[in-house]
Image (cartoon, rainbow, N blue to C red):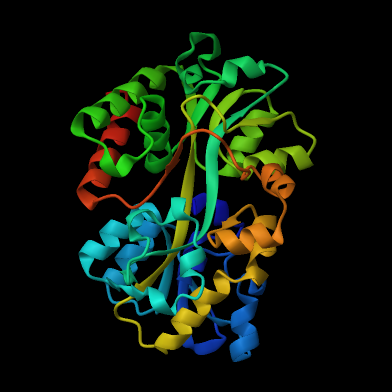
Length: 346
């Protein structure tokens, strides 16, 4: 989950302290928007009400709040944060035998946890990141490779997300790596240098999908590394957009899910019931309508057509896919520090 997807007009300050009181036996710490009952209808059917929700603005805020003693039972974070949360001792492993759909999870989203009896992170929702472009100004043959971001012809008309995970996913793919969990120091350096070469060609680093849609709709930006939600949004608005997921180097998947907080005081079984509800067949269509794929591959296949997935930017592709799986905290911090330097021109 990319943080900015879920920001609404409500202030982040208000969201971070607000709680929606429902079932007091379970407190879910989440981004605003994920309290939608349609995402966890099976939990409501089972327990008669939604769990209680508290909200955060971004995962750094959530991490610091939990570290400072805020008590919740489960938290919804993206894979890039998992190692930090695990290393800090604020989460405990899930018993995967109690996750009903665990064997049906999309294997691209579970990585080395496949078959494990415990896991610190259960993916529930995912999206794709690929080249969004204006087909009225950019011929399709120009977006067959990620090297377009180095093309001086489009200098000043391109943008990348202001997000370290997405930026390095792009750079690794562009330099021939489709599994960043095994990246060597030399491969990291190659990816960082690729981003340095691209930086002068960029007009800006976009921070949220609404901003990106505006930049592309105005014609200011012709090419972007973008989340899949931008594609159907602009199509629906009648704006010119293409979404190139099948470049020769590949595209990326980002993933988010739930961690089991160690200091939770709620009913443990209800934490499992909630995650199982998020992964149920009933949640697939509501999640897709909001731009998210369900991590339950079997349920996704049963509930929606390939045509629906393609229209959402989540269809099957026959190219390398770099899933943004959890990384050791030291490597993620190295990426973050390097990315900040690159954006500053170093």
